[in-house]
Image (tube, rainbow, N blue to C red; front, side):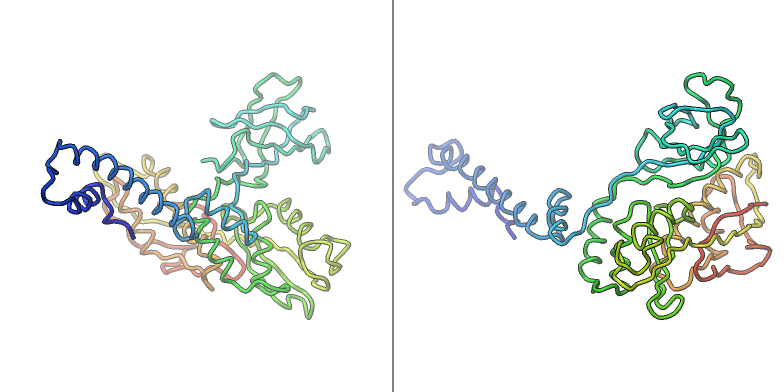
Length: 356
């Protein structure tokens, strides 16, 4: 709007307004007086342009976008730590710290003790999504714990998440204000679930078990299969057991809501690869698996916007050909079938065994 209000243009405009009989050359008295004034005027226009942008959520910076969204009850998702379930063969104390890879965790709550096995919930000290899949990995106590010989992660409760990026929040804000969320319709349930920590997305099933019933399938923040603990926590928040249909949670009165986990559709992949000299399956396996996991994650994130998820052999092969050391990829098989794979309704694809 004020792109032409540059220092040079403003100064030229001021100098052009001076009568011809006066000296306006550079370093003249008038030039030296008008030049600083033009600089200050330019700064005012810049401030006006910035303020104008902040008036609208389309162009506001993060701080002011949050202010716009807050007026309509929409808030950015904050960062959350990873939460694990782990088993120990000796008693430990709340606050005991353990190392896993390059991350540290602390014992938060004991959930079970049976047959000399103590089950605890552990929380990452570092907030945010961690580059780690911990299930089955051993934990190392940071301080010695008497009689402890086994400490192992047995489950992933919540994968942790990073603070929602500004542009993703802006996009979600416009989706939230455009959807007609009212009175327990589908959009209203999608809005409810978006406020519960740990839920990445949901699918709503009206009349799930007859009139007045609603089924909701959820995935976690990583668009992966949610833990039992997360499903239970969401059920408590939406329609607590023992008070079904009474409006004790976020669901409207008379809505009997069942929260369900998305099912895992395990997909084994058989690859036929040609390697460059000096490369082999042994040297490239970890990179291939990393690439496939990234593709599966990309597909899963289309879970809510697509009626049916599909895995494509062409997409797998295209990505693998970008890996240095692989010169050809063909005849990709999903679960032994040389064709694209369609994920069943209510499920998300999970990478199984990869062979080549």
